Amino acid sequence: MGQRREPRTQSRLPVRIFGTDQDGRPFSENVFTVEVSREGARLEGVQARVKVGEIIGLAHGPNKGRFRVKWTGQSGSSAQGQIGLQNVDPQKALWSVALPEARVDSFGRQSKGAERRLHPRLKSTSSVELHPDGQTAPIWGKASDLSLGGCFVEMPMPLKVGTSLKVGLWIKDSKLWASGKVVNSRPGFGIGVQFTAMTPEDADRLRSFLQSMSRLPL
Image (cartoon, rainbow, N blue to C red):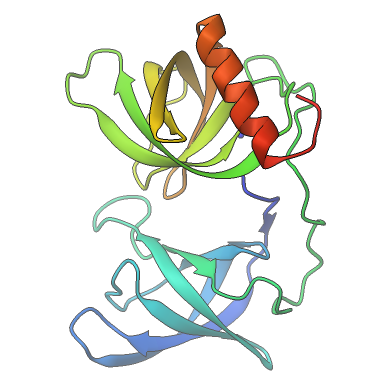
C-alpha cells in the first residue's frame, strides 16, 4: 500500500554504519542500501548483530545521519543480513540520489489483482489487532498509515497476499472492526490491508477520526 509512509527509491548505494552491537561492542561496517527514502533505508550485507530500537550512525559520502534500527532479518531467512532503519532527522539531506517529494499516498488504478486506491492515506500510529483466517492467536501491530479504504501494518514477517482477516483498529481509546484482505506484502516492512467490510457506525467513526487528523475531504 506505508508503507507506505512515503515513496521509496530502490538504489544500491555504498554506506558505512557504526555504533554498538547488542553485546555492547563497537562496530563499523561498509554495506549497501537496497532502498532509501527521507524517513529511512533498508540495508543488506550487515554482519553486526544490532539491537532493534538502538540508534546507530550511517555515513554516505560526506553526509552522516543517525538512524533507529526498526527490524533485523532473521538468520536463515531471505532477509538475513538486512536491517530496516528509520531516520532520526529526516529533514537532513543525506542521499546522493533524487527522491520523490513527500506526499500523501493517494490511490490510482493499478494492475488487476492490486488494490485500487480511492482514499488519501494519512500517517498514523494506531494500534491494530489482526485475526487471519485459520489462526486462533491474534497478531498485534501498528498502522503506519491509514485511510477509509485500508491501512499499512508494520511487521517484520508479513502475511501472504490474499490472506483474509479481521482487523481491530484502535482510535481515540476505542476499537472499531473491519473485514479485510492482504493486498501487499513486503518482508521486513509489513502488509497493506484493504478493508472489505465495515459497519456504517464504525465507518463514520473512522471518517471522523481521519478528518480530525487532516483537512482533506474524505
